[in-house]
Image 1 (spheres, chains in turn brown, orange):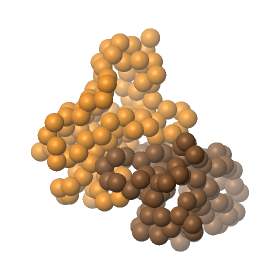
Image 2: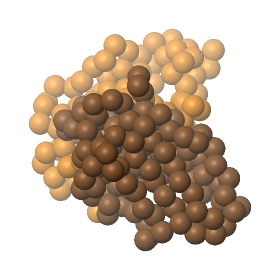
Image 3: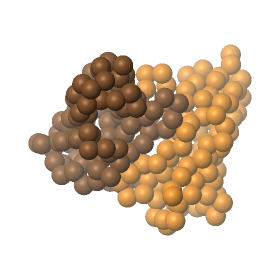
Image 4: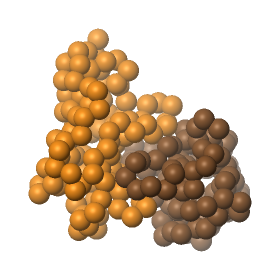
Length: 114
Length: 112
């Protein structure tokens, strides 16, 4: 596609529910990133894929967070047993894999846990 | 710890005037890249300008330019001839490895 597509745009979950957030990167982009942006803050790194390999997951805040990219294209970020502190915008970005050229970001999914 | 500091939570500028947004960072790395991103209410982060740390020449992109002071670890953004469409949240960031570290942002208002 022309850009990075994320769905859903908004998600409201009851505390304790599981959620799945989808990211469809730009075709041909080998690198894919997930960031978490709390209200009024800058985005914070969660995890990074190169093709289907998850090379860095050090930013995932707990074992309730899980990301996958099984075929090296679409990625899903799953949050189990959601808690109120998980409320944030989740941004996905992709790139060709060359450092220093910046990433193309999607418009994010705003997750609200009630 | 590697950090990025944007000391101006909010800035305002008159249309057609010039504004400078400040950013300082702290890293022990020697090989890194610096960026300014713009985030309008649509939430999409849009790349404004980039700078390689090993280059002394300041990057310029149309009305946007940076003042990169490597020794001081300072990376400010200058917007010339400000336009109403420039109003947004601006984030400074650096890239080490395959990870971006962002500041907390500066909300820019452009007054007509």
